[in-house]
Structure formats: C-alpha cells, structure tokens
Length: 193
Image (cartoon, rainbow, N blue to C red; front, side, top):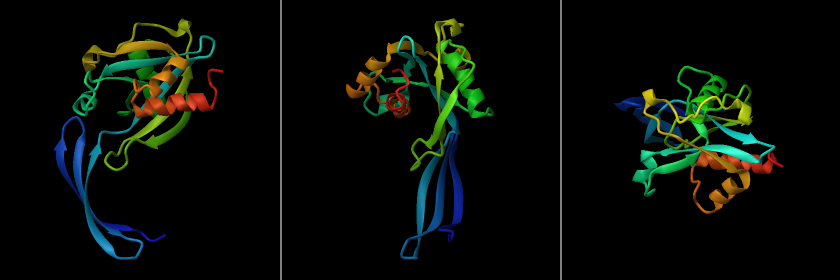
C-alpha cells in the first residue's frame, strides 16, 4: 500500500487540560492527485469505560454528572447519565477502569472483561476508549462512590433495572454514546437474561 499522507506539520494551538493541535498535511486522493488539508485535532489521551451489571437483580450501575460540553450544546441541565469512565493517564486500561469503578461507584470489582476498543470521534479527537463489562454484587460495595474531591468530581451513582436503562435510551434520557454502546452490547449479548 502506498503511503497516502506526507508533509505533516503539527502546530500546538492550546495546551491546557488537553492539547489542541492544528495539523496540515498532504493527502493523496484516489485519482492520485495530492491535496493539502488542514484540520484541528484534540488530544486528551485515551480512556476506559465499563458497564457494571448484576445478573441476579437484573440491574446496572450508571453515573450522573455535570458535563459542560453537553450544557453548551443544548443539554439544559448539563447532567449526563453514563457508564463509569476515566482517562488512562499512565495506567493500562484494565488498571484504569478498576480504579475508576471504585472511585466513581463505590464498588470494588476484581475482574473486568474487555469487549472492544474504539475511537470516540476520529474526525476531531485522538481518543480511543477501551470498553469493559463487569459483574457486581452488593458484597463488592466498599464506599458511597461519587468520585474524588481532589478532582472536583460530584458524581451521583444510579442503580437501575436494565430494562429501565434501555427505555432511557429510547426516550432520550441517556444520550452518552459510550453508554448507549455498552447497554446495546449487553442487550445483544443477553448479559442480563
């Protein structure tokens, strides 16, 4: 396969919580002509997310927290119902999600199952998410969860019947893509049947 990209120039536009780069490059079209393109790419690192489910009770654990970007794009309250998730930082995906599950939900699970990995929005973000599922029981609850004060997290933990969560997708209460993907994965694979 011929390399279809060359002359890559990356200019950092902003480096704060994440990095916003402007990337110019030459791209070879299918008619073999070269065109110069310029895009912005947001690099916030990779992350991991997990759906916690209880087969016996037919329930799942989700979180609810304020997300400024959703607020700026029409979510009047700014609150988003979603699966537990976090940035990898220096951790491997499994270590990251085990830590995040306990911090956010208060459950200490010992095993997670990887289901797939996917780019969140490859047109603008470098982020790849690692998706997991994990069974939980009441015996695994070690705290109230809610996130870390040091990270200014204010997370509400929701334990819901799986059927209610599926209905929340249908009625628009759940609008977070990673959450929809994991709930549909659970539905397709009959995890709670």
